[in-house]
Length: 96
Image (tube, rainbow, N blue to C red; front, side, top):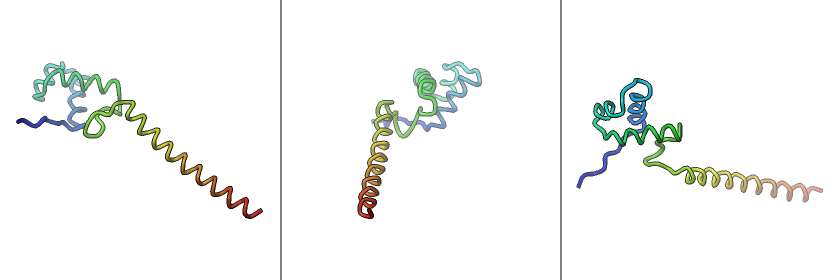
């Protein structure tokens, strides 16, 4: 059983660069890099849609999953701030 081939973010960006900036056709660039043309086309579309967020991690993170991750971090920060203000209020109340 063949293991699925993976490509680095740098490889994908270089492949996209061949098409978008160096004027290669998708078919020519894919042939030169020995990858399927539909895969290169998908990478180009993802890059255009997601910009800097394209090709993060070991797989593609859905935009709503990324938003959930950001919101969880914000909630955690707000809990820390809330607890800090509660403790400060208790200390100020004791002093007066």
